[in-house]
Length: 172
Image (cartoon, rainbow, N blue to C red):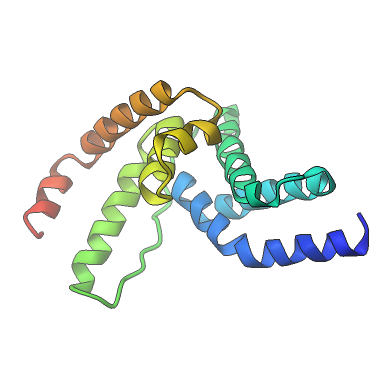
């Protein structure tokens, strides 16, 4: 790459790295793995930077790379061990901080128990705000698959939350 391309890539990386890392974290529930997934996505983008014609599609390319890397990681035999790490909590300054932390922690814990592909659909649809068509494009699947995975993912999330969901609804 020439110096101008390197500068453009560096600017894009600086502007988007935190958002990509957050998305990766929501997908995998581990900040260290999220860093690895984000790095994988940016390395892939760097390799193809000169070939990218539509600079408006960079976010979609990186998002797809993160999702694919996460799904690939879950397929590796040594990655199938059960996650035992406690997810970090952060609180909002608005409302009751204890309830906010409990809700966020419960949601992240529940998401960690949802199968990877369903988790990817839920994160893209509800946390990233993508519609069905954009999610299907990101995951390279049909819109019907996105809809069914959304339904199954929400059912799995409800099941994994169990009594916690009732507690959250009643205000703990």
